[in-house]
Image (cartoon, rainbow, N blue to C red; front, side, top):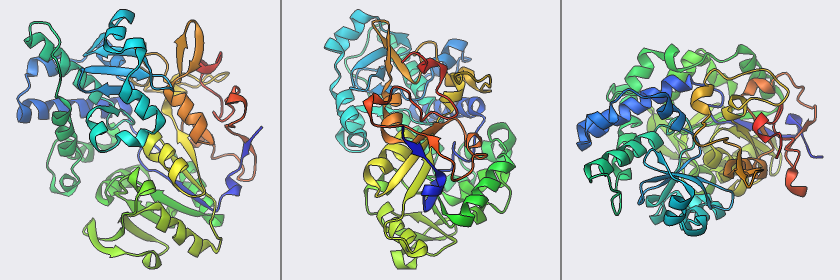
Length: 438
């Protein structure tokens, strides 16, 4: 059986959002839904009667992380590990087996298969206009928005599906407007002002024990933060969740990292001026205690080697986004293991544990089924994401508090690549109940 120890690593790093900073997911998703739909109505001419109806329990149940858009067909899809179609909806209407076969003969979907072989093939370029997946609490409601727009267009078309849909560019514009980093300080838009005005409604206070644990790590390890957020937004969330001295937790802080490209490409690091990029920084100019924008793993790893005195230091990165934080570093970053934060693990209940998740309703779905498994011919099998978790990470935990009391040198059972890893020991403190019979 494979084991994991924090003490085995020279450098331990973290994503920020939904990793150290945790959100009131229900409130956040409802805010995002409102902001996106308002943009589509006011800027793109969509009808309010379809998008501003009060959300029903079924609407909330329709939302799930890890679903896929089939943009052209107007469908939402749940995939198996091979990229075949397990479940699908057209708009918000779930498709039966015969309907799925009409859309996807033998349940095969070319773009799903491409994604399954290399998810980053679809991140940019022509495939990104065909398929996309919902990966975190900042894009989860887009699936429901997309599906409701499909419903509206079909209704306006006499109840018949269109030959092809072109909705995604408008939703992408809504995301670009909502998360524009220029609006954090400028006060524009409807997302950042609301979050800044009511942080307690959207952001959890961080457990002080977690912050003390990171401080303890820093005594013997190099700690680092790699976040996609710009520094000004980082300061909004951390000042509320952590307090003012959060920067001292890390030996180096990378903001606006543009993951997954941070791990795959060679973008330069930048110094900051008024929260934005100033001067290009080379590896030799990176300093302990520094805060930088963009950058790349190759140069960061060299910096770690410089400050640890270790050739090719062993690194760990902890995050929630399966592509940006787990797949990309596992496959493209030298000597870097990963650990998943999956709130779904707790939301679907832990085997032999009685703790629950406050946002279970929005993190679980009766419509789509378990985040972790699919059921074929009454046999429980890996979902696409369970397959990814056990293949590309060492551990999967619902939140950092699950490991902070474990001595750094204590072995923890972890995922193994042997015999299909039927025990799934890398789920800590336990695998979800929904994987009990896999």
